[in-house]
Image (cartoon, rainbow, N blue to C red; front, top):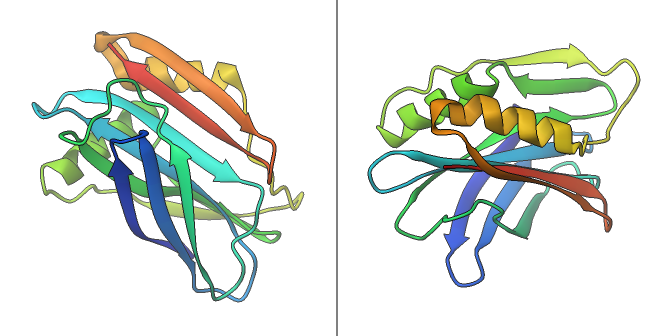
Length: 172
């Protein structure tokens, strides 16, 4: 991926997630973060994806803060943060895994194992830089990722300034 996630920190007071992106390229990029939450026993709690319509400028580092929309997330839990997708006017980079396969890769990270993830790059033929914000997508992702545990709830939160979306779900 052309964007690096340098660090991510969860603050229980206010349920705030802060992270730092770094764009090492010569073009403006639009990254999407995905965070997975596992409880102290290793059970999957839920996940949140966040993208922004505000570009990450070339050669810069930027910090973002958002409320983590995963129920029951607490400081004692384990968090796995990753760059899920990056868009530019020319290309789209994305992690190949989706749904339950992505949760399994995050679980391997929690277990200090190789996540075995691959990324792919495709041309951005329509120069689309938007991030979809569909409640149907959030629900479908949650049902697939939570599996037999079942979906406790999901959110799809449009961000109006500077624009973007947060898609989250919590498992039972």
